[in-house]
Length: 356
Image (tube, helix red, strand yellow):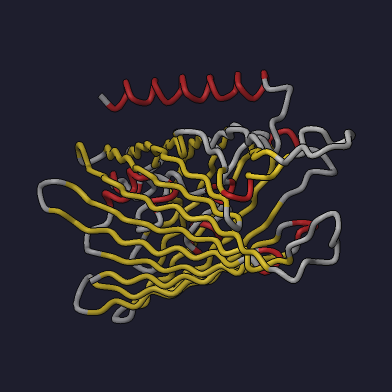
């Protein structure tokens, strides 16, 4: 059975390669709710977003819903990320183990763009009014281990975007699978073999902004004198797709013992609004008996077409974390990530996790 599934994986890889070679027209800026492309969880981000085959905590709600099946205790995760240009991003999520059923997850992502001055053609320095903008996504996830080596997960999302008096809403679905093989197991144990993960994110309805800001009085005879009164008018807004992302990745454990374990991973991404990209990551966990573990992670991100070019824009990430065990298998974790974003600057991420 596992061999049949691996054949399917190979077909997906061939299809992805065909799509990469065939794509000659980019679609930059053609989707709405692009905040859905910002990853969550310091550990995953520190690994260069190469997490689809590694996902095994609450952040799996975002990366690969199948990974949530590896959560063994009721767990929570809270992340804060001061984003670019004073934008604040928050994520809060929880995983709830239901015996003989699976694992349920709930996640909330929120971006606050702050307040800005209202301007128009007459008052280009501001009218004295202020407006705000925000994005939000609420996700409900179900994940289950079908057999010991194969997990499946799916998520339902409600997405909302607000700009002053206008708003747009959408619904989307995520799907993911996670396969644990005994290939390249340096310890001989199946659990330390190669993981293969795939996910499709944000397949859903289109978004269209609407609100009182789009209603404007219109002079039907602007260049004629007379007593024509203005009529009620409304600007027609376009519908926009969500940022659909297909991910496929592998993860290996070249080191796995009682003292430390090293995981290396690679993800290939095919989005509907940008060029294909390749993410690489690694995380080293040092185990401290009677305490927990300390981790160091790093990663890199680049477009597939630009990896071998001198002008390719490669972003690097690095992170550290600590996990404290209590009451046996319960844990408290704290993680930090520093990420470079080229000419846009650098961002930092802070995450706290708790299992109980």
